[in-house]
Length: 350
Image: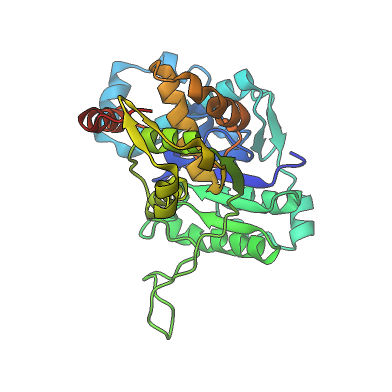
């Protein structure tokens, strides 16, 4: 855990699938999330002995399946028992620590939550749900400078209505301790008034995300700029992500003066220019735009579309940065096909 600067907390609400899988961060999941994806630690702050039944799936009958169709409470309880069984199995297979109320022999990786130490350190025991324990423990560890939340929304009109104040409290304490908090959801009600309006002012909240996003300034040759401008496909994403890609393409682009000096000439499927003005240009990349370059080069390689001139780019970006980013960038088959169609119509080379 030492040396990590970012922590990602992942719940099971809308948006949890957007959490990145790899990068310079630690990830914690709640309840049975580890069954769905790998995390560094799992939390289940229930009395597990009351739900433990290792043979539950083997004992399921046709009558049970039928009852699930008409009795939602029965189905919910059955899913909870099955989820716990699968969680313990998965944590054991992957050797993932499972933070619980106490150690359970049937859960080999289970570890007792250090409640007394956390309460003594943070001077509060205002715990209303499992997420509270996760946030409090993160503060207690004292090594995290950023906490990002995915799939933790605390929607009103349910039990979460009573649990939301606890999460707000612990997130407020985290911010007070200097930890940047970033709630990655468009539907969350955490750290928000019920109507999203500032009391008295009657205007909407506008405070921006606090997550630190590293930037990298790197030199790009004319060849590298031409190759990337012809290779990076259009993207779909959030406003901030699309703005990042737009800035990347503008930074890689050529000014009117550069175009006049370089004297670009289309030659077959490629482009030639005056080498006398072939000077590198420093371009500043953020985490997401760097991820776009990496994914572009990777899918070009997967389709045997790399040329010899791509090798330095591939080695610098894919070999040098892949797996170290905070942003989770993907390029869909649909985007690739559309990009290749447009390139074919325009006759662009790379």
